[in-house]
Length: 237
Length: 254
Image 1 (cartoon, chains in turn red, green):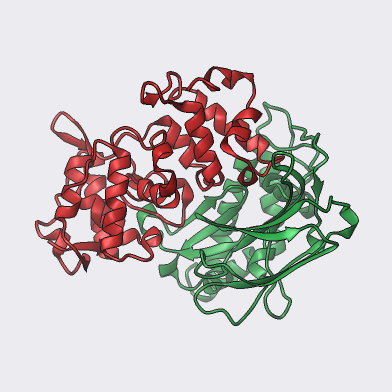
Image 2 (image 1 turned 60 degrees about the vertical axis):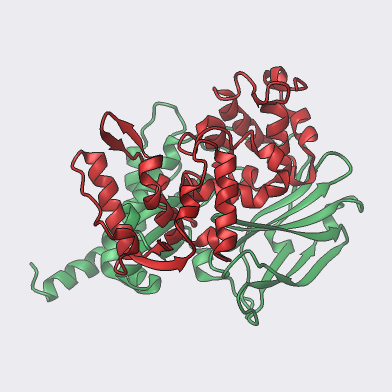
């Protein structure tokens, strides 16, 4: 079927669907929901492109989503909440966590993209990873530190860095996070990079943000600023 | 909690910065920028940067090296669809010394083509009309990085219509102010009130100007009385109670 974007009625219906699962009283979507003109505005392309996404790898999925955005010629994809929400519906069965036979969808921002609210936008499984990939695709080799793991398991490092717009928009910050937390020898994140350290990192960086212009600095210069508590992550590539 | 600036970073006064919107823009806003920074004695090799932001959108523009007057006209902010609630920041950066900030001006609001500041910008609680379907409410407080906006559902009508209504002034506004003051006193705030760009400081000064005094900075203080005083004084200033009661009487609701 054609890929589409949810209209307002489609969003409302989808929210009822999600709330139904959260409250334990599921309300199924109509069988033709994804192509029903009441709920969906068709865009084009082929939904099989979404089926081909590797949802077990966030970087790969982000790259695939970017290719879809380009193929559909979505020039305002960042703001296209309806498109991202349609994709959420289409991939719901593959993305939603389960407990026994029940879906556990979690919070609404995971499924309904809100481009105007950065505190919620970064939580959308699909829009957020696409947005970061699109902004930093020239650093694809370093994005893996933030975009590792399955699409539906973002992790604490992502939650901290992506939630802070002054950090996630800065290419040097991507370099710094990579230098700090990626083990190049083992091709994985360093031990301890997913615990309390990311939360401490963003807290420290917010303090330094009052004194330094991070955009004018390299990733190494940012790392050099960090206090002793981060020494175990420094220079341990 | 006291905040200290150990770094020698200078605060650039808003009076020395002017960002003005042109009225001839099509898709994206276009601004002219002028800075008068001769008195700050910034080094000549430092760079001046303009940052524009709103919600998830962000742009940086290089205004060049420090001069007594820094000007750049016709800056196209192509990452933004319009100028609503657009805010700016000016940074003077020591690019030769690891990005250290020599000076900064935060929360710069643009002037319109007639040299007026947007009235919403002047309000301590800007109001925004938007689709709140996914929130399931008709109004909510939206907390930004260092800002707060009262959002009302667009189905209620235009923002201007809503804020002028008695219902809004009587019921929504005081409830919103209560939520904001509660969060401010519960979070850490600067008892010295040294940085008037900080959101908490602005609201506490607002309450002080109304006559409510300052909240108790002790950790175990709940500040219920201070919050209630602030709201009472604020509502007195709005003078809505009697107007609403008159309205109720006229409509025969009582």
